[in-house]
Amino acid sequence: MRVPDTLEEATSPAWLAEVLGVEVAAVRVGAVDQRVSTNAPIAVDGADGSHRDLWIKGYFGDIGRLARPAGISEVLFYRDLVGSVDIRTLRAVHADADLDSLASVIITEDELGRGARFLDALCDYSADQAAESLDQLAALHAATWMSPAALVPWLDPRFASYTTARGVAEIVSNFEGPIGAGVPVEVRDAQGLYGTYLRVGAEAAAASPWCVIHGDPHIGNVYIDGGGRPSFLDWQLVQRGPWYIDVGYHIAAALPVAERRRTERDLLAHYLDRLRARDIEPPAGASVERGIRLGILHGFYLWGITQMVHPSVTRAMLERMGTAAADHDAFSSVQV
Image (cartoon, rainbow, N blue to C red; front, side):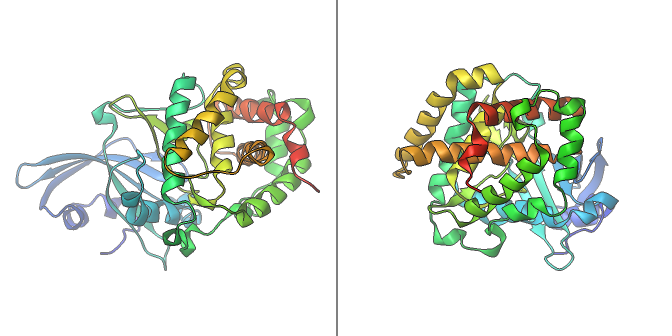
């Protein structure tokens, strides 16, 4: 089946009829969210009287076309992997990619219509909810722990790729402006963060044991489903990597600073317990604490180079990640 090249084609009755397996009488497209990727709600009426509310995601705009490689792993996650891991995420109706043109498309069920609530760093999120989302990460990690099925090219580690198109200039822009106001002075070093992340990425890419990680599990990639349960979305950074990249990042990113400081040790212990409950024994001792610091640095760097998110959200995330890096003296964990 052809992967559509434009939003117009992806929302056409003819193409949707092929995907959904019914004759489509009408398609109504709602408000389009066009940033790097294109996200659009659609209402599909079947000629047989059926109706479905869905969402379409692809890389259709001018900026999106340049970023098409970023969509391939997410599509393949929904197409090839999600059925074998027990993690709450969007329910995909169709996901496919053209590996020549790198065009991709994902169609998912409408979670908003089922009462879901999508989050960002300005939303309330409790330590109890963070424990639930860490349990979801433990489910993903345990299901793919050193799994031969994960030894596929699209899950190869890609940490180094985050340092090529963006880096010091973007971090400087964020740190020196109002967005970086909450970053503690002891970690407000753009060149230092970039150089440190080069070493973090190289170490994470070669780490063992490994599993499949989300790669970007900040609070904005969490939603509360219609049953009130934390769930994950936005799988562009899914890849093989060490468990601690997700866990250190998520604990630091999910909670306000004071709440993270109060609960982080208990949350880490909870995650490790949930791994053991799934018959996975993670490393112990000092390697755990150091791993958490590397996960914090991973998240701190990704938000340091972030450009196309609302400034209020980026500011909150940089404060959380930068303060966590300072609290844990994370830079000292990476040897020069």
